Length: 83
View 1 (cartoon, rainbow, N blue to C red):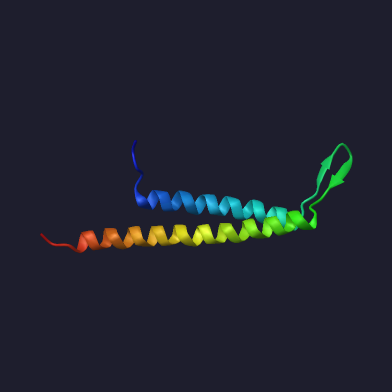
View 2: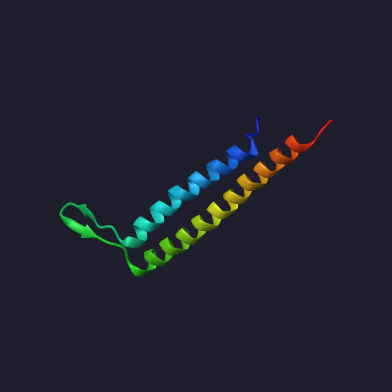
């Protein structure tokens, strides 16, 4: 099993958060879908769930940004070390 570099993990987490946030904002906006001539829209309960999902996506993006920053700092520290 190969472990990816931390900066790649941070980027993947950030992209996943961005995708989740996009879906949550679509859900919050209550985009209607046409199915067999009927219109289906979000109810109050699903709107609350979508807002919670949006909040989780923001938290995931913040955590991923911290992973990227820490990885960058660590690489900078390794470069600064003289032998």
